[in-house]
Image (tube, rainbow over all chains, first blue to last red):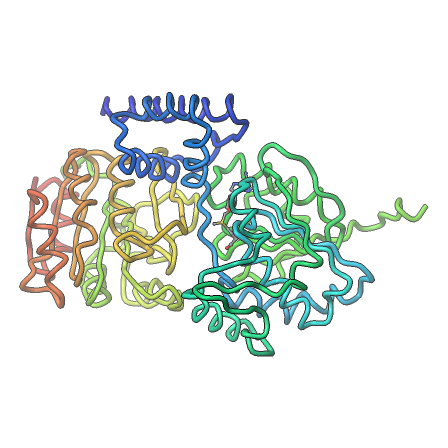
Length: 283
Length: 194
Ligand SMILES: C[S@@+](CC[C@H](N)C(=O)[O-])C[C@H]1O[C@@H](n2cnc3c(N)ncnc32)[C@H](O)[C@@H]1O
């Protein structure tokens, strides 16, 4: 259908404009996903065509900020998929305890709920004092939210249930203070976290991590881009380090798949294998 | 056998859907000519048992849809709980956890609208029992791109609202009782009806 083909051309031009003007590269994201997000914005703001939206975003940086939020699905929650956190407690923590210092990278951390969840878990497991968490996202607006650690109080009921299902050992209320219609996460949960701007598509390696958590991010990428990002993670992990993906994010497509040990199939927790006979670092 | 041009079937069900899907899938032969893509509304925390249960009672293979999978004939793909299922232009499957649509994730409209663009007039869309109006916009999109629209006769539905809404919003091609949907799909694939 010609109308469809024209629309696809307009979308490709819009993505090109975003890349050239703002440096964000969406050209290898899932097209069906991008299309839905762009159509939604078109409807909300009454653009007669996608080309009109392209013109607007080139000339109006504030509009682009809004569009960026549309394109970078930020949906998240505390202890999302509680069974994942339970598996970390049961299967990964014992390994982490063998290190005197632990570096954790949470890639695509959105507004921070996942980061606070991990901080709570690591604290309860007695690892918090020796951990450094790098929490990154390519969207400044959600990163600012993450730094503040203020969340709507109406989500707390779900979060508390998630926390309990995840194997939480205390009362979830210990970790925040309520103020009117929001909660503020306890300051010490931020103490060992660095929030930073990092784009998985265009930025480089984040060195020598013991654990990388990247859930519900590469599911929006095409295969080519997924491969590239997994390579980036492999280069950023120490031997024996852990790679945690979203529950539906298989890595069988990666050229590095045989260098990964599948620790937990349902939760997609992988461990980077030790290279046999590689003693070069000790020489 | 006369070949129809159909290349995929999408189905959407909500309240009462397990029984309806079971009835339809159990009627299909093992060598069904096209892939089936299915959204059944369910709680985000439900176990992924739906595909397993349906698989046990069908001759065709029923499995949970995986991202980037290429749908194969004779296999039914079910959207996982808490994920939208989409079809890309190159006809690979995508999953997404973006906002709920019609209060649902997975949502029928999301599957139908993306499949309508990917398959055009080679698609059959089927709206089954349910107590909301998900699937109506999706069926409209299927119609717009030349696909064929089937709706379960509301009188044979556990919940009639969803099929009623679909009939009200689109000029659908077939409204048939539940037990006739499987045979109708086969008839359409064999080019005996159209
Ligand atoms: C759905 S959220 C996932 C949040 C959290 N990991 C979770 O599972 O709940 C996806 C996040 O990935 C970020 N993201 C998308 N593309 C990215 C990229 N190329 N580089 C860095 N972050 C990206 C988005 O801004 C968004 O905050």
